[in-house]
Length: 294
Ligand code: NAD
Image 1 (cartoon, rainbow, N blue to C red):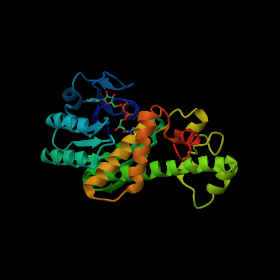
Image 2 (image 1 turned 135 degrees about the horizontal axis):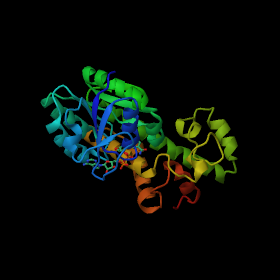
Image 3 (image 1 turned 180 degrees about the horizontal axis):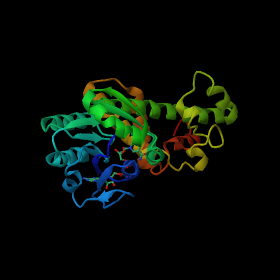
Image 4 (image 1 turned 90 degrees about the horizontal axis):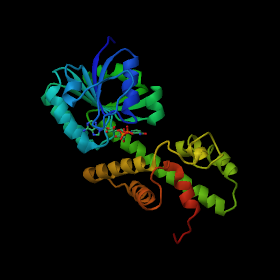
C-alpha cells in the first residue's frame, strides 16, 4: 500500500499506539484528541476538521457510542468522497449502523472494526479486528488492519463487527465468573487449585478464562492474577461491554439471562466492592471472601 493520509481521532490508551504504528509503517498520520494527548511520530491537529482534511482514511478510537456519533457528524463534514471512515471503538450496534448510514449519504465508506487484544495488542500491532461493512470498505481498510493487528475478520454488514465483539465479550464475562466461582467452591471443598487447573484445563470445563488467563495466582500461564490483578482487561471495561450486550439483547428481543447476571455481578463489583481499576479476573478474590449469604 502506498503512503496514505490518515486522520486519527482519539489518542487514548489504545488509539495512541495504533496511530504510532501506522506512522512507523510510513503513512502520513495526523491525530486529534480533546484531551490534548499526542502520539509519537503522529502530527497533532488543533481541531478535528484539521485532522481529517484531505484524508484517505479517518480512524476513530473513542470511549462510547454517543461520542462516536458526535465526532462522526463533524468528521463527515470534512471528509472527501471516496475516503473511508474506520471506527475501532467498542460501541452499541445501533450507533455503528447510524454512522454507517451517515457516511454512505456523504459518499464515504464505513467499517466498524472493534478490537480485542487490549493495550498490549495495540502497542505490539497484534490486535484482532472484528469488522462490519461493505466488501469495498473492508478491502480498503484491510492493509491498515494488517499494520495495527495480526488478524481481521469481515463479519458482515455494518454493525456486524460490534455484534461479534459484544457476543464474544458476553461469553468471556460469563465464563470468567463461572471459573472464579468454581475455584472458590473448590477451595471450600479442599481441592488444590493446581489440581483443579490440571483437570479442568484438559476437561470439558476448559475455556480461555481457565486455560489462557487463569484467575488463580500461581496457577496456569502468567496472567494478571500473578500481578496483583493489575489490568489486563479492567473490570469496568468488562462492565461496559456487558452493558452493550444487554442493550443489544433488549433491542433485538433476545433472551440472555447469563449475560444479564454477569452484568449485574460486574456492576456490583465495580461500583460497590472495589473492583474498579482491577483486572476483570479479580472476581476470584471477591468470591473467596463470600458465603451463600453474601
Ligand atoms: P481512553 O479513554 O484511553 O481513550 C479515549 C480517548 O478519546 C481519550 O484520550 C479521550 O480524550 C478521547 N476523546 C473523547 N472524546 C473525544 C472527542 N470528542 N474528540 C476527540 N477525542 C476524544 O480509552 P481506550 O482504552 O483507548 O479505549 C478506546 C476504545 O477502545 C473504547 O471504546 C474501549 O471500549 C475500546 N477497547 C479498549 C480496550 C482496552 O484494553 N483499553 C480493549 C478493547 C477495546
